[in-house]
Image (tube, rainbow over the protein chains, first blue to last red):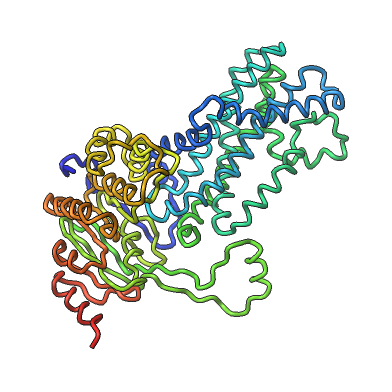
Amino acid sequence: MTLDAVSTPFSERRSIAGRPLEAREEIRDTRDHAALLFELVHRDLTIRYKRSVLGFLWTMLHPLLLMMIFVVVFSSVFRQSKHYETYFLSAYVAWNFFSQTVVNAMASVAWNGPLMKRVRVPPSIFTLSTILSGLVNLGLSLIVLLIIMLVVGAPLSPSLWFLPISLLILSVFTFGVSLALTAVSVFFGDIREMVQAGMPALMYLTPIIYPIEIVPDRYRLPIKLNPLAYIVEIVRDPIYYGILPSPTTLLLGVVLSLGSLAIGWMVFRHLAPRFHAHL
Amino acid sequence: MNVIELQGVSVRYREKRIRSLKEAVIRSLTAHQKAGYVYSLHDVSTTIRHGEAVGIIGANGAGKSTLLRVAAGIIRPSEGVAIRRGAVAPVLELGTGFEAELSGRENIFFNGALLGFSRSFMRARLDEIIAFAGLEPVIDVPLRTYSTGMIARLAFAVATAIDAQTILLDEILAVGDAAFQVHCQNRIARFVSSGATIVLVSHDLMTIESMCSRALWLAQGRIVADGPAAEVVSLYRESTSLP
């Protein structure tokens, strides 16, 4: 309780009616709350895994069961030449990260609403922490995938070193979508259920369980218009095909993720100052 | 120096709140009358200087908590400007940001982080916090096993172990048993004497009189009186006492 230990000088902060959030201020604020970011991720993971190996395995059970079903049902149907399990999982982990993060981010703002009304924190911190804990889960899923690949004898290619860049593109894209949807869902609670209901549809519009080649040409347009198709491809290429994504795909991925972030932030910065009336 | 400045601050809410997209669509198709606003704060201007101890009094719903939240930067005003200088720590409603599944110790770090303090900063104060809350035997047990009083003690201990230049206290003296209340009052008195700025919301007029040099009386979102605590409190007493 010693006041001489105060580290911050009397820096001035203003809250002005009608002003949207400023990116620079939000970034500085988030840096000041780095400890909170860590605690939020820590809390998320401790509660999810309940501090046990079993808890971790439990969360892996769902994708693994799904994989087995798809392997049995589709490996013959789609005649994906080899290692259908790797083909499916390499895209599914990316998809799972996207859909889980978007849904969790919306839930996390609603869940932490009481907190946001009582403590001053950068409003985007809950979305950011959801991305970070999602990334931890994604990392663990990728380790499980690598183990499966080793067990079934799928080839591991040096292109795997490209994965961090793939995941960065995936994360930025997901962050943008999450920002926009969380902001809107604060105002309209039913958006959450709509998004949740729409996710399976979006999954089948993304070449995850099937290769795009088997889709007849005249049905390909909706898939080609789906940004996730490209994002997922950027993650799958280095894992399953053992190649780097083509420059065109890569460029498209970067543009899509930056565009998503720009739009997401624009929506978020204008809506966030009015959150408190709706939480 | 002014640590808090409010310039023409209003906070208002829509009378009818639209909660879902469905409602918004239906409303836009059928609505004919414009929804009005309810004001929590109405054109409030005031300044609080460094080192002051200010009490805020008024009936329920007068806007006391809203004023603290605007001062802390939690709520952006609907009109006007709110300026704060230095570290302003709100100690609003005890128990905010506690997680039932985490242990008491983990909750100390989590709560400290919410107020913007690092793990190492909190670690240095950990023993003091646990001792002040009197929770040594149960500190590693999940919070869901704690009683309400225990959680309140932990929350107060965390919130006041920090080095904020300005501390905003909202009705937090009402919790805990008598012995703990004395503890709290002593701690606040030490804050005041060490030169920190205190803004205190309380229904306990005695506390305001004894701890604060200045008092603000709010009614229906507006400042009714502002001045020396003894004067404002006696004005307030007169207005509320039955004839």
